[in-house]
Image (tube, rainbow, N blue to C red; front, side, top):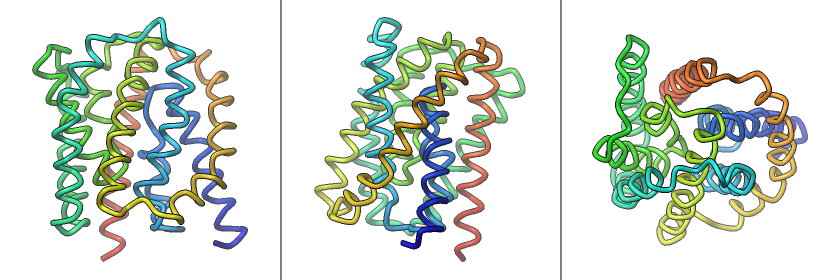
Length: 240
């Protein structure tokens, strides 16, 4: 990797980590398309590792606001979703899978923006957890399903609950990816050199959090979900 390439990746991880620490997701959304262009070997495992680092810190910071019941039901769905994501990643063309899943996310964003807000009932949370596990393991972008179902949460609760879910879910994904051989020396090297940028992004999130009320938080989550899905589709189409 060139120095210029590293600087591009570090900048992407810094801003993506700030987003992750502010709304509970964002590293995969913002950074995955950029990392795919500079060094595709770092996707998805290195991004998942960096997200795990940031979410661990956020869980400690927002531990009192975490919805443990909601997190538990989301993880019930995450387990089969993670396995399915790893199997699909190994069995299907990555481009077709990414475009299909991104299309599903965009459909949810359109419905939500038009006024439909899925209630965080047990069934919806489990389904969102399964979709997140599938997306996160296959593409490193697992935030939108959970953001859509938890969009009415307050800032601290959204960050804490999303981070609690993603901390456990990311560890699941890393275990499954390790079993399929997707975690290697290159993955660990990428994590080591980009971890400082992730930490700086976490510190930057403190500034962002001062300006995010409930309404701004909801629309930021929706906007980032849409942008991430569009970038994912664009990344795959440009790779054709």
